[in-house]
Image (tube, rainbow, N blue to C red):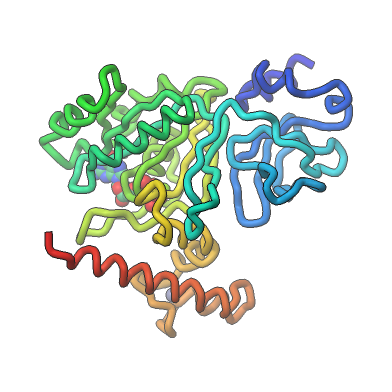
Length: 331
Ligand SMILES: Nc1nc2c(ncn2[C@@H]2O[C@H](COP(=O)(O)OP(=O)(O)OP(=O)(O)O)[C@@H](O)[C@H]2O)c(=O)[nH]1
Ligand SMILES: [Mg+2]
Ligand SMILES: [Zn+2]
């Protein structure tokens, strides 16, 4: 019995969740934590159970809360069917891409929020403020993590600008690629603790996760030279285990917290295309018949469909046009 609790506690299980499980449920269900959300399936881990299951709860109306990453979920002990999402300690959401009436869940049951920004031209006090507002609304302690300190000699200027936003705000400056430097963040990532990373694409969220884990298993990509913004590399919200026992919840970069039709929305909806496109021989492949195009190969094989390819291209083009207009506008 004891070892069983320890496994769950390492996943973040505590009295708040334990007390929600009725005796009847304890007999026929097991609690699992949602590790990642993919289209149509979720990755969950519990005691002696790990795998992909359907996110759809039988009998729940579409308005009912469905599981998001970080959630504790009761699943049927025998069929693994999800039965109920346990009440959350907290929940990050934002307005859904394309539909301002709908909200998209980002992450649940978070102990600390790392608001990640980098010490370069993409740094914005206004954006940090919006994330701090979000953290306050949700009721999670924020830490501002300023990356790429190694690329500037004005690191203290960026840090001072961040500290000035709010008295007592934790602000850490790091070289996210350096183990010793990133180690100053370890204090927030103790056993069973969940730290969510939010911030624009390209600020180095996945890099930090890799460095803190001492691995390079998560894909990262250089930012654009043109404007210092990222390429929306991460497309899945996913929890990653640290050797010291904590959990880092990596998320896709968001340009605006509530932007409607933007690259990040496209990246999330077409994550399968973006993953395959990373295998194209040329990094700037337009998937129009270039040699070594993995996207065309996948369509030919039938693993990706042409109709979704067309929709993806159309949205990506629209976004590029909007982006070009924005950058051309005189200041
Ligand atoms: N020199 C330096 N480069 C960094 C640092 N942090 C990240 N980078 C680089 O910045 C680029 C973008 O990093 P990512 O980790 O992919 O950024 P991300 O925030 O995960 O981006 P998305 O997944 O698109 O949201 C990569 O080339 C990293 O190597 C840092 O502290 N110093
Ligand atoms: Mg990333
Ligand atoms: Zn291609």
